[in-house]
Amino acid sequence: MSSHGPTFPTEPVGFDVDLSAHELLRRAHVLDALGPDWDPGEALRGEQQAYALLYSGLDADQQRLYDELVGAGVLPPRADDGHAAA
Image 1 (tube, rainbow, N blue to C red):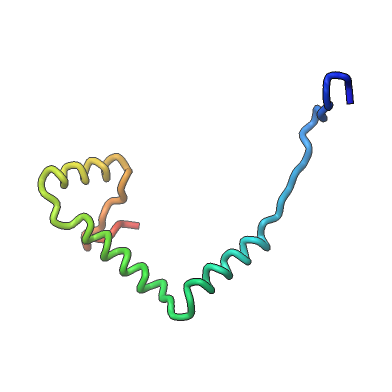
Image 2 (cartoon, rainbow, N blue to C red):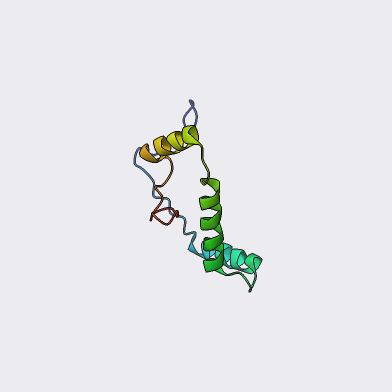
């Protein structure tokens, strides 16, 4: 150490952290919390129904704003069936 404080290496030092074991544990906890009766297909259908309901029955001004947001890429476009397009 110099009289001006600590010195640092002039070359970058490699630093690796492997979080794969932690990620597997996190996923296991999530699935455990969801429980054995959780149905991902049903959950997705419920989200699609909620999305369709949210943007149904818009008045002209709301529809114009919705169309602007879709055009700007803020909201996903909806398919002809009323669901968000993939």
